[in-house]
Image 1 (spheres, rainbow, N blue to C red):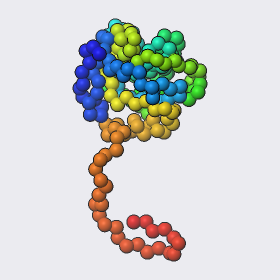
Image 2: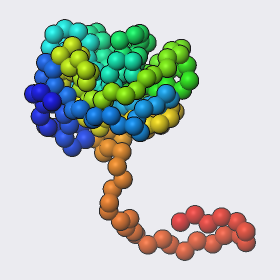
Image 3: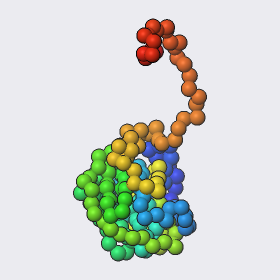
Image 4: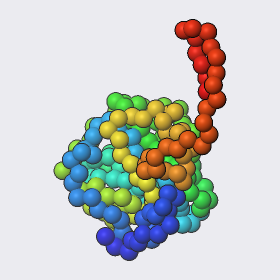
Length: 205
């Protein structure tokens, strides 16, 4: 919806958004109507001073009012919101216009934010989310003009559980290789040499 195009992302190609009311609408994905979850993505701000063309906050992935929304405030701090009600924010902030990995995980009342594989201390946020509206990448589906992201969003993933800090770090460390397994079959580059070992012992090749 709106002025969205596909362009260079961190892993292959991603959504390029102008921050003025566009995004990718996902209708009403029932499988993402969760209470405990993880949302993570690679993002790049278009400008170091603004995350939205109008100067407000911007959504990375969000349902409509009363549901969950994951975004950035104007200073670049990630937040998790019950849209239109309240929110909890990370103490870390994204600066500059390079790609960064951002994530939020929620398990019961416990929320953890991570930026570039480094997690904040856990925060308490005991929100319960309502559903029935569309979801969107890069905007609020029911108020696109107020919270549209200005920059690139790539590799958005939603999990039906809270990923561990180690799992989030491994996704960040994979970087441009992405999360998808290679379709290439394994190959043997050199044959192993014989080894001798005591009976019932281990032999390492």
